[in-house]
Length: 155
Image (tube, rainbow, N blue to C red):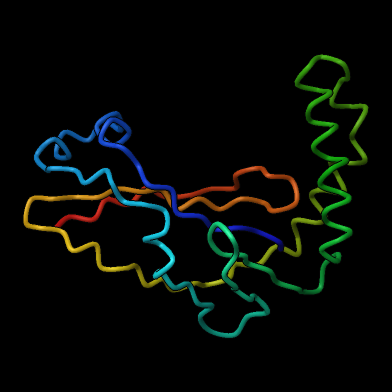
């Protein structure tokens, strides 16, 4: 794995737009800078080949296992992404990439979960105040967002 984990502050508009009616009860602090998250910590828990290190805009998660090397995965991901783009654009039928798609299934057999723990900074929120942000996990090779979570912290 070669991934990034980033903290992205949200505006009140972003949060209210999520549709949760309870969020309207709080005063949102929108001036949470990304630098505030330099105080955050992420650690690998338990036995794992995963490693977490601070990166320029968040954290970098790498791991090695029984599967293909990170370089081989990167090369494959680029070919796979190009195939998906061609299919999406109507330039090729999925059947043209059957072998590549089967290779993706085989690669996924090596996927393992890495348990992480996270310590967030103290936002010094007053009662009734809230701050929101997304924690975004991105494939560092392709730039494709793999997933994430929205957190709202309430004082």
